[in-house]
Image 1 (cartoon, one colour):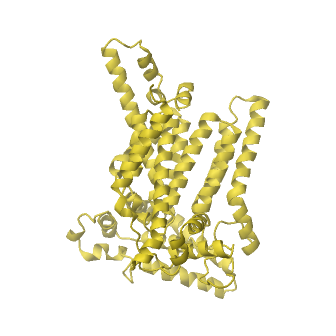
Image 2: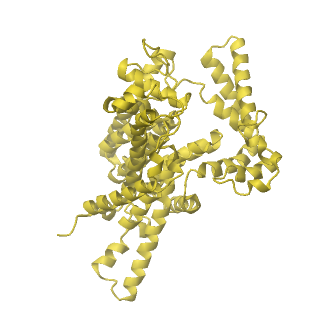
Length: 490
């Protein structure tokens, strides 16, 4: 008996993930747990387990004060891990810092495995999104491999960082948006609301995906016209909002009760990245050219450049762009506080200043965005293959008005564009864009495979066979990813 398409898809995806996981297995050995950000996640997980309080406070033996410094979803996942991992629960806080003893390594190995599961889950969701687009199994398996074998993107797996969860969140949003575009139903709209809510709880920057998803839901469910379509669209919008409210909305209401603002994290956290970006916008032409060596994965050609061409780009340079930006935003914030403004007002003043600087010097800002894009792409092992194909697939989808492909690419492209334009684009900000980068190339490969099969069938004089008719109706061959044939195949 022949295997069913779903069974075969699951088998192929599992095989690719297993081989990819074996290839990056050395990444599962935990690394140093940084006290600032990573330590805050671990403390927050500890307080959730023992006190039922979301707080990054380092107090361990008393009730900590609730705060809004970090997004809650990753610490919540760590709290769940503490429930099932005695070593992490017992030694997680004690071992914050360098993991120099075997018991500390044992404590954080479950965290690395959890991040590994997030990362490989994202690979599977990329494959499912591609199948939802009507892509054949070989090309969909390629999409899974582009994530599962992506060693630079998996660099955060052994660290206490939320990037692997963010990769999973972006892949989930792509999958759900494709499902919404195919089925155009209220349940899928609710799922999109939940997905964007979970994404916002992972990284506050993803909060803006929700209003975009509302527009998508309104358009996708209003097809056909008439009162029936209108009722379906209104119901879908309500369910999408309910899904978001049941996830991110609850957390935002909690924060409003604490600080008087509906937000994922406390306002003002963007001061540092915005200030850094404004200062990097001041780089000289020599520094601009040197940035492609300095921020390259293996620093190509850096030894051939004068030190003064790249030294200002270094974070260890006390007079470099980054350290200058840190001193600058702290000074401006303190000046606003001294003028009588509270924290929220002072943070708003500082952030508005830096956004104004970006707009005032928008030519330099766009010019420096180029090396920032390059810096983010270093998180993708295969970016020289995937990035041009992502741009090409997006342009083809725009030309053909292929909404499903655009929906699949949207979350990862949004994450990529946000960090390229509004931050100093640390390489660790790049992995959440990997799902989008892993979708473009398989789409083009699938189109090529369909074209080759069609030509071979034509040469054999077999153009009227069922197989050739199925290939001819492939969504990849004509850009119609929402056809009934593709829905049936998926």
